[in-house]
Image (tube, rainbow, N blue to C red):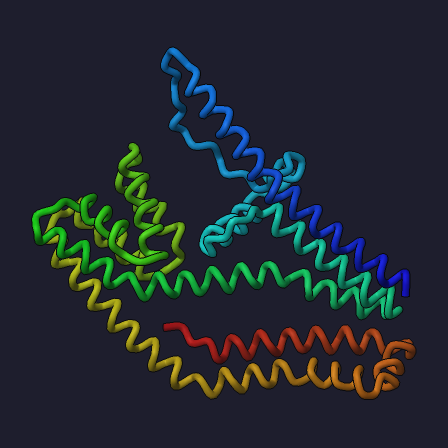
Length: 321
């Protein structure tokens, strides 16, 4: 019992310490720098040069980890982009360290305390994927919300153009009047071109930042009109109508495929649920599998087939539209 309590306290201290190093300490450091700048500005008698160049966003608050992640190439960049799409205040290094803490905690609790080492390793590997799943779910929800708001934003830009305003004024109007997350993305787009980035490059960055087909339609329509001419207000009005029609088809497809998706979830969750039930009610069945020499290969093979079957079911029920 004392060993279990000490292990639990150690894991809690480790998680809190990592959180303080990654989040609280950088915030306190930034606040201290800001206070120093304010004090220096208040007592200065001469004007100082202000740097308008934004520093590259760090992958981690710890310099060694930031340097190591910087050498991974596109992997850290893809994670950073996913975190930005989810609009979370965390770094790639923070997410990886949080995942490592979850893996270590699950492995210690299940593997060393319950003496089920292989089960602790498998459970730790699954629980370590929780931060990635949370970021992916939040990013997907935010992108879906943005996609639903996009037709109204395009209509707002079209109305601004019909009223005699320019395209940049329409972007600023969306940034001020539209709800989140639409306002934040268009605010970034407007600020980028307002501070010197060419509008074409800012629009391309907008399309890369938002992996949505409708956002690429919007960028393509604006860039094409700027090169070949035409009535941009009419083009945007037609584009908004097309996006609304796509949403109607999308909802119809989701209704038709609802039965298949529910069936897929049931079939995917049935074997793990039965295994957990046997562990709680009849642990001798699972113990036989763990003690037998063929038990562990059979468990690994079953998990592999379970993952393959889940992926196949998801591919069948997730219809592209």
